[in-house]
Structure formats: C-alpha cells, structure tokens
Amino acid sequence: MRRVIYREGVEDLGIFIHTGAMQWDETLPITWQFGHNITDVIGYAHSIRREDNGEVTARIDLDDNDRGRWAAKVLQHYDAACSIWANHIVEKRKTVGRGKKQHVRRDIHRGRIRQVAVVLTDAVPWK
Image 1 (cartoon, rainbow, N blue to C red):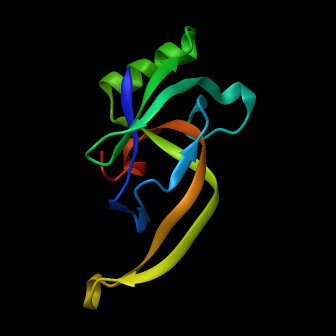
Image 2 (cartoon, rainbow, N blue to C red):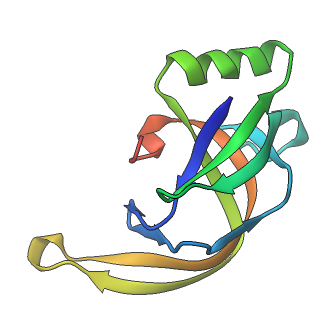
C-alpha cells in the first residue's frame, strides 16, 4: 500500500518543512508509535517520493506476522496514519501570525528521515 508519510510546505503543530528539506535512505524501518528497539519494527517503507502537491509518499510493506497484519488493519480501518522521525535537523525559529494567533514556528531547512511510524491520527493534524 502507498501512504503519505509527511507534507512539505504545510505548517503542522508549529513545524514547517520546506520543500526538498528532508533526505532519506532507500529503505526505512516502520515501527508502531515510534518504538526505537529492533523488536518494534513492523515493516519497511520503500520507493519514497515527493508528489506535485507537496505530499511525500512511500510504499509500505508490513511484516507477514501478527503484528504486521494488525498494523495493516489499523491503517486501513481505524484512525491511524504514518508519521516520520528525523535527526540532523537544521531549523530556524520564526514568529508568525498576529495578535492571539501569533506563535513561534519551527522552519525545517534540512534533516534526515530515519524512521516511519504508524501512529494514531491525533498525532498527525493534517490527517
């Protein structure tokens, strides 16, 4: 299945990722809720690409075991989405908006995606 893993050029929770800012390896591990142990890996993301509308998508291959099949069911039938974890972030903080809508936004100019996670959509505001 092909899924959106993040969007460029859209502010989410005070974070703005510039177009072309993120880099990634050919294959990335997929975990449930950003677990960082090898036993948390439930599959892999491949063929990551930038779409014309700013979405970055990946082919999601989940493991053929109980955890992988469960994660596939959650993605297909429940309120879940894919999200990213990155490091080597280069960012600048910027004050945007006016009055009560004024806030500090983190503008991401560069980073390296290391992991994709299946998360509840409450953690992904654009879902």
